[in-house]
Image (cartoon, rainbow, N blue to C red; front, side):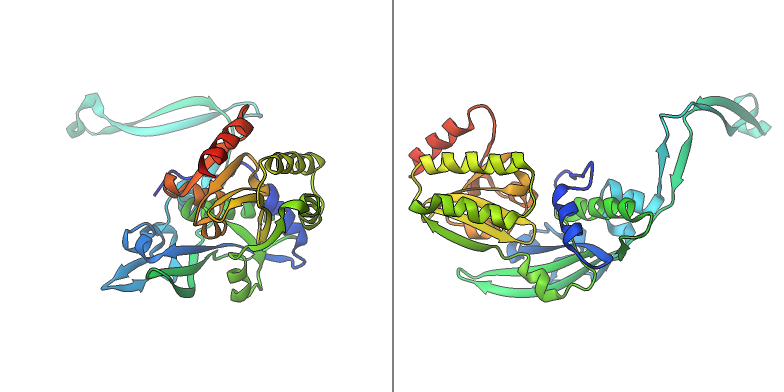
Length: 324
């Protein structure tokens, strides 16, 4: 399992989705599409998903003791919040030591007082994670895909004082164990979970650039002006590379725009994570269903990732010219 990746704050896409959910009650969950070969390789044993005697086997509920990561430990033990903005206060530490360094002569207590920042202990939540198999599908080439729903087993209420603290904790607990997380109405059906892993694509001919950008903007809803400007500037650069089609995709919290240069040469980026652009090949439909973190776990041959650094336009053009 790769290094855990945590949020420092509640992500903007989560904030937007919460504002769009009418219900007071939410759950933190995600869906994972896993290849049979990945399960057999043991990539998801930390979630209790494995093969036993050539049959798929998984735990329906993962106990806090079986979860991994920093937040999993906090989930079991709780944690302290250190108030460094407050003045230090005296605290006495006590322990027993042997008399004259010889345990046979008995023990005596030593007390030491030090100045420390005050602390507040947060009790352990002891939340479980539920695992449900939603779908098994056979693809060409004898490839089997399993779609799982992974849920933090706790319903969160928007009106509770601890809502944001609990939400932040649940997001990180799921993120470090699945590298993916989202929020849903607590009454969300399995059909909706399945749809969130499917990106609906709109394909626009090369001469429909303005229509493609307008369509993307209309689907985003209220959005920061700098984001809108960024989308337009990057789209215009893609247009200058003379693609055969423009693509716009939506699904769950995934919002993509990009361009097709041939059937197995696609350039796109996720509006939610606009710090890099991706060059994809035959597998672009499959990879587009994944979160940014899931993409980064794949083999390098599956994609080329270019950060939006100083010369990203020149580097992208060089790659497109070479591959086209």
